[in-house]
Structures are given as structure tokens and as C-alpha cells.
Image (tube, rainbow, N blue to C red; front, side, top):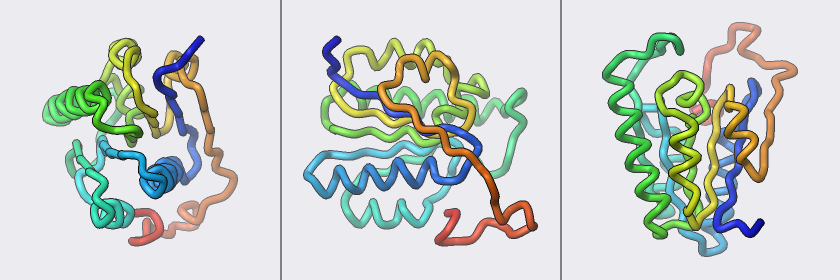
Length: 170
């Protein structure tokens, strides 16, 4: 089977899924590939976004402040995520970019904010690398993927009550 695209999935309960995808994005950019990033469920810039913007890598955010139960996401968030996936799929299909990162897409699939079947069908004819990050990657996405990496938490300082730190977690 000849691929016109490659789908990477970074999943699991461990730290580093977004960081790994952004690292690959910066590597690709350094080699002259065109990179674009879509963050879902994250309404603000992280430290790596600041660097990517300085490098000229487009970064888009689709999210709201605060947390939600995966079984009951707010309607406002549903609409924002649907628009974000429409925009990301249009970008993927445009051929303008060589690598498109969909950060926290897996969790959107898990929470029912985007049907994974619709997403998989929409990228069939894409001609770029696609990375989906986030916990709880659905089995159908894993089956379609060309590369799957699971980050496994063994030990984390959050367990000692240490909060997220700027420059390390965001």
C-alpha cells in the first residue's frame, strides 16, 4: 500500500505527547518542511508556541478556559472544536503544509467532540504527515496510524502535589 500521508499517534497517560509532536515539528521546519499546529482544548499559548511563532510556524487554538467532564462537554466547547477540526481538515487537504499537528485530537475523539470515523475518512487523500496527540486514542485511529507511541507514566511529581510549572508543563 503506497501512502500519500503518514499518521502519527502519540497517546498514553504519561507526560510528553505534545512536547514530542512539537519537537518533530521544529525538526521538520529546520529541514525546510512547512509545519502548522492546531491545539484543541488549549485556549492559550504555551512556551513552545512562542518559539514556533518566532520561527514562522502557524499555531491555532480551539478551546476554552477550565476543565470539563468528558461525558458532558459544554455546548460552547463542542462548537469551537467542530470549527477547529473543519479548519484543520481544510489545512490538511490544502497541500500547503507538509506536517500538521493536531494536539489533543485524541481526547476530542474520546470525549465525542469529533467522530473519529469522520476524521479518518476526511484525511484519506491528504498528502502530508499528520500527528494526533492526547490520551485515550481510539482503537480505530490506532489501527489507521502508521506510527503509534504510548507515553506511560511511571512516576510524576504531580503525585507529590507539585503544580504545573511555566516553561516545563506549559
